[in-house]
Image (cartoon, rainbow, N blue to C red; front, side, top):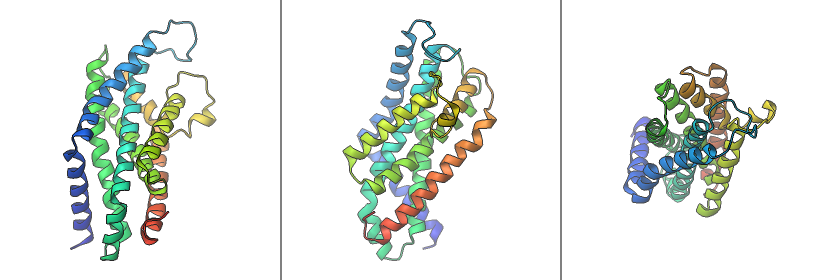
Length: 248
């Protein structure tokens, strides 16, 4: 079997395994809507007293923030679970002749597929719950995909280093929550700090697409750079783990 066919088979098996789990499907449908609604309603309750450093309506900012958080957190946790469940299987496949690049390639491709599905659900939900139409729906969807891929790769990385479902999930959710605070633009945080937050650039892409109907070109390359960094880190740590019997 060729390398491409092995990767394709791995992606198909991992994706089908994800969608066969009722809990995964429930999270996929419920979490984005719940997060978008809670963030939007919560921020809308604050009076305009200059507490937040933004000129945009707080409800819209809240709903966008909820969509980005839900996409990132859900993709990250699913990436974590995928890596934890695959550790022993991938070790055996490695012994049988599968290359580490083929195994990690199938994991990364699965993250991309699942992130696209999550982002589609979040984008549709965001469009329904917003009081105004999304200015550039395709760009907003692409920004959410970037958020999902970044945290999906981060989930794979955390799952390789910390292969525990509860602890790993808590790490990812807390990271996504703190990251989202930096990315939201609600607080006057120095740009030298916020530009390193993984969700800051996807968040700005989604925000400008929703509110202004434009592409935040200054944030595209930094967002792709985060994807590349997490991908390279994931490849290195994952390959080392598989080669050493499943221990990072």
